[in-house]
Amino acid sequence: YVLRNFIRHRRAGGVESKTLKNELSALSAFYGYLCFEGLVQTNPISPVRKRFLKGYKGGLDDPQRKLISVGEMAKLVNSVLDPRDKAIILLLAKTGVRRGELISMDVDDIDWAKQSIILKPKRKRSNRIVFFDDECARALKRWLKVRGELKPKTEALFVGAGWVRLKRNGVYSLVCKHAQRVGLHDSKSPKLEDHLTPHCFRHWFTTWLRKNGMSREFIQELRGDRRKEAIDIYDHIDRAELRKAYLACIPQLGVA
Image 1 (cartoon, rainbow, N blue to C red):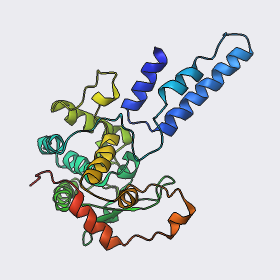
Image 2 (cartoon, rainbow, N blue to C red):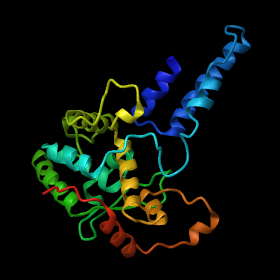
Image 3 (tube, rainbow, N blue to C red):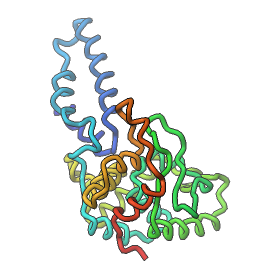
């Protein structure tokens, strides 16, 4: 029971499959040592890990994560008045970036002419360029106007307390706060599908691009997924074509 709650808690916090598996592996090794020393009779981690992590790996995304409708996303975004928080939520939804990628963004990473952002190099990511649309551009410009008045001593696109680069927990907290206010997040529920976390936006981004007819190859490129086959490195995707497909498929949320 304790282990099941631990797994649910970590999933609800947006922890990725690999991280959770590593944590359980460490616990399993610890219990293995206790068994060897005769301090416990069995290792409780192994059966729990096999049962509850089954199906929580691979694929474009985790099907158990909360998926909200385009209307619900529009309701969430349009309920947010704070310029920074609105820009963050829109950017998560419109680009599908991970938390770490978002907080690593600097102001100069934005290419306004191409409405794209160059992400910092990450081991997990193949493609570093993400696009955004006019709705997101307007929100970003509003936030940058406020940010300019704050005069932070950092190049970070998003700043938090003390006008320093926003932390991972800051993104998680603001997403959950706004989502809970409009009934899209239940912090007390043990069920993963009741939690709208930052990673759910990546799930939303992927799902709605697919529903709107974007090819799997283009979605994987926008997500920055690693190419699994050796021959995939010879598939060169035209940036202009990719951007055109993105603008045609990304949902519009009625943000003025």
